Length: 144
Ligand code: AMP
Ligand code: ZN
Image 1 (spheres, helix red, strand yellow):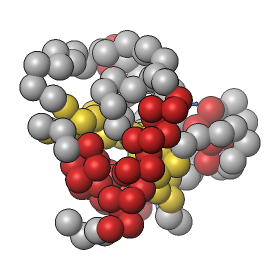
Image 2: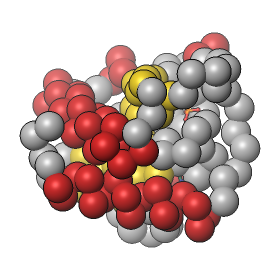
Image 3: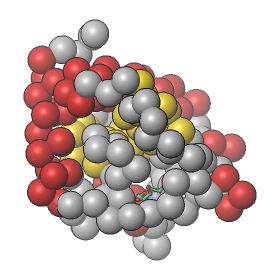
């Protein structure tokens, strides 16, 4: 059931815009508008669940597979030196949106990224260019 107050449910429903890079029956992936690094993507289930504790098994598995596909595409498109998957639960973990999501975070040596990296708005044009490259990489290879 969508939560009418939830910003990610609104993105899933297409009620507010997002720069999407992937969608399937259970999940969507879109660019984070406050990227911690260029190419920062969020993977979310279409169904609303506030956090890991509440996630139905099928949606959790689907998010894991989508995160793997997105990470592979980010590796090809952004050529980072590494990728972190980060998933926050609760205020102490700096969860700011109460709809389960996995951060796919490109990493670069010396970027000094901390777990609670803070929200700094990104340049929409640069984010859209990154999204285009990631979409191309997803289309080029689903498996590797
Ligand atoms: P967290 O702090 O782990 O809950 O992560 C929530 C993430 O959602 C943050 O990195 C925000 O930048 C991101 N975010 C919030 N609203 C939007 C939006 N409308 N479009 C894209 N990303 C968003
Ligand atoms: Zn939601």
